[in-house]
Image (tube, rainbow, N blue to C red; front, top):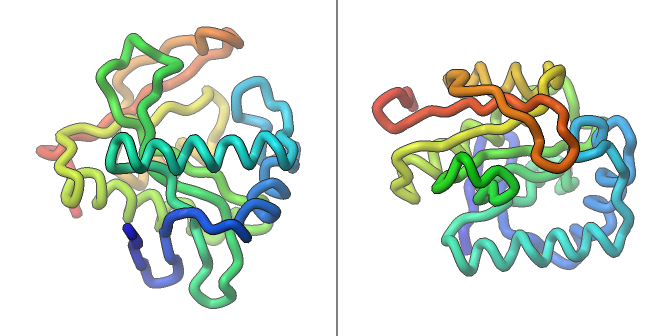
Length: 177
């Protein structure tokens, strides 16, 4: 089982009791504002998503980690790696992403988790390059992307919803652990 510990977080595979807190995160309009069309997700959708994330671990050797706060054991959200199939122009690519419950915003958890995930991607999984895709206007994600040292590669549009996206990348030669 793959786990990563940071000073404040445990990044781990998903447990059955993660479903309800992740569904609460996905049901918050503030959290989902920058995700796809901004629609909130229900318990069934969240269960299907977690199942897909776990399948990606089995198929790719990486996936989305549950983020657990070491101090309290609370589920704060997720971070991890996935193949951005919705943007075939990037292929082959692996993208880093994150989603935190709004009560966990502004405390540096997103950057801490994403940094650990980037190290995992480049050092443990041997990836040469990692992307991050964010919606233009999502300043919180832009801040995390800057902290990771990623650089803007291109702007594009979401193929379904049409809104502008930014693709940032970093490769092993640019990475400073």
